[in-house]
Length: 226
Length: 226
Image 1 (tube, rainbow over the protein chains, first blue to last red):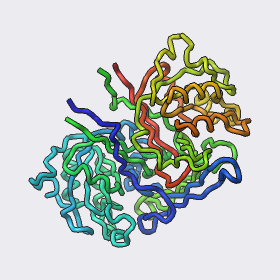
Image 2: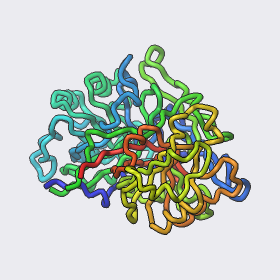
Image 3: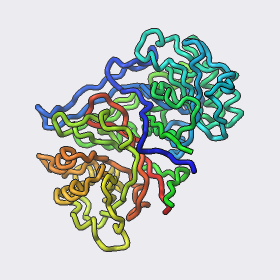
Image 4: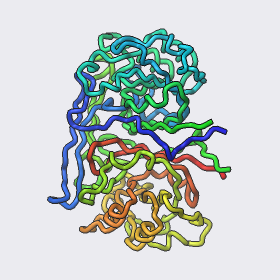
């Protein structure tokens, strides 16, 4: 019988903090005390950030006119089983190819089912904060995501800034996914590595930003024993 | 056998939006487009909010010097079983008393176990956005939370702005909880009502705001069948 080990949850989220990495040009994160215990008796903070800061979910309306906004995706979609694909043989800064789904190695032998999350570990997350991956992170190929759309997956996740190349002008990978149903999780943190080739139960509920294009989320991996 | 119905998840979170209710004096929420599809080809948003905006978690460091910050609470603590207490017989604006735990009615017959979440439905959430509950929301009594601390509960939640009275200067309820272990969830939304007197599986992972006093969360109720 399948069992979810909630007591062994692993955090897949980056911390949100001042001077954290953000996608070049996007709003910088700023956490500013507005009350402190010595002065006011309690701590309070003002948060300024992008809707795509840190580990976050892209909703269809990020790229699709009249696409679902982040608060319109049914809440139940943010908890479900995920397959973790080892794409770390792809050189950092290039596209993960369709081959990553059937390498025939010890990894990646898990079947991808309809309505699964599919999460790609590229290794870009090992360099979080390193200028090398600011613009030259690993992304996904169009052929790969077309196959995932055909398989009717629920969502696609990656441990780098974006599913599209930084050099892309047309954002074909975002558009292929978001216009066909799957939502996207970006900037997963490197503890994802411990689940390569495995199935996990994923919890990734984003903030409920009314009518918006995406939102930061706390993303948690629940190990599964079969 | 106990079963969690993830496919029937109910959202217990308020939307984050401009002009939403915030605790009087706290940072107002502002969602501002920084890119739009017609002009830039994609939608992006700048978010300004309090660490205690909408449905959120208070960490010990909100009131306790050197208490755990929100990113220091182990991630596994944000998923677990919860008991939902019907406290709606308490007049709006007054304190929920210790009696709420053993009314002997059809409701509130669920046992509270060690490490459970305990969530109070006061009815204040039915008036979300109504000036009546801006300062006169229902809160918790000191005697009640002392009992919960003694029972070693994991966390205490409420569907109003605060576990303390707005008129409180010393915040005894926050301090009793946060200095003894349990964290706090505030501003739960009114769909909590459908679980009165029941046990649910709660998912409430807050944003991972580095070294901070609390954070907004997306809070989800998973129905349980025994």
